[in-house]
Length: 619
Image (cartoon, rainbow, N blue to C red; front, top):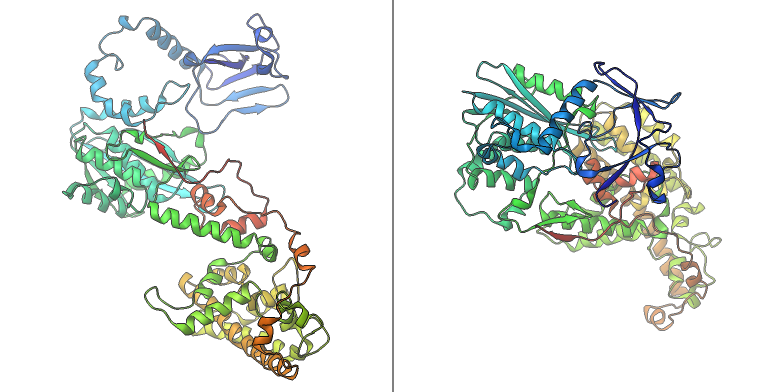
């Protein structure tokens, strides 16, 4: 409201020296300004409201989430580990400085021009928080002042991620600082947002330490990240020119490494010595930091949220974003991934794939199976033909009688299955036809046996009865149509159930072996069922010859089912269309195809307005 903030008034019930602050909603007092405020800012349940200027409003602490405890019986709030007396003293001194800055001596960091110059890199590269007293910057400046005069500084950095691949993912990084005798000096812990990974957490911690200690000599930084260690010394030794083109070719964390390079080469900071330590080994201080970070996950209100201002990068004129999210990986790979996911979403939104939007499918296995073993630098006509036939199965476009009616309706409108001559020949009927029942039952049983034997060949110990029970108890072990669950007909199409993948994972089958075994299983099913399709085609060819139907006659008698278009008009609303797989990767570190599993389990919608890739100018 034009630089003003509307807030509820609370009465303090605790004593100033208590270890916690207890507050209760005010029921109305002389300070109440509710009647003076416009109706659009009123809270229906609020009895006492106050107005304050935004630039003079102080937040209790820099927190990622509220840690106040609500007592519903009397609508009181308890803020733990916060002494009112200290808080009021800070406000008093801050107010004195704000109104009379000239009265302060030269020991005040904010008034010493030399210190302004010293701390300029911290203030330059760390974003100032809106509506706050910049606690992040003050914390970093405080650490800088503590270590600047030390003879030797030892720094330990680390980062970790929990619940990776889930919506509860959290990433934290920490820095512990010691003097030459390893006496503890200070520490800071901060959260990681978007593109969360342990490598990013460790890299970001290294960047923050470079900013903190840019003017400090004799600094040794200990890290257990080989990526950070190797990348840093490559930058230090690098002599070639480096521009935006190379920056955008960085595999990950492109802007973090661009800023590290600028600090090293252009800002001419005091370069620290980076030492690689073995993770979770015998380094007591690094293990201590690792333990502290794990403890911080229990109370995320005690960590900082530091945002870096990348607009000062000299070699980058534009920060490339998507959905207002900074793209931190190689740009070409990101665009390719985005395109692949959007294409997959379009495929999944087809009406014929409605079941797979509800079922749990291991799409990685399915796509590996479709790809065949052909490398990128070779082309095989046999492989291309086989891949085409697999794709026809996947989209149920093999030339059955019902499929032929779409373009040759007048010619085949009264035709039935060429084998049983009783039912319409749809894709599902090809495998369910009673004339092939015994063969199909044999194929299903032999497929289980083949799968089990291939697992044994790789020396994995799996109980045969457990594997067979999995097929018997689930619908994908049955030869039937099901609009909601996977069946063996879906396996014939190349759809691989995620439950089988989980079974292999639970039995400690390695990822590469698991995918190879799954593809072998699908290939076996394809080869065996292809024989049934070949036999059916021979029967159909004989029948067409008996009715004197040639290729020329088919070309001259094109006709269409008049009711077919009406069936096409009954479209369902697409479930996907916003690159959810990419967003799930950015926010939750999920694999691009895992978002279908997540959506299948619960109703999942990202509450954002999505735009296409755009470029945000700096400055």
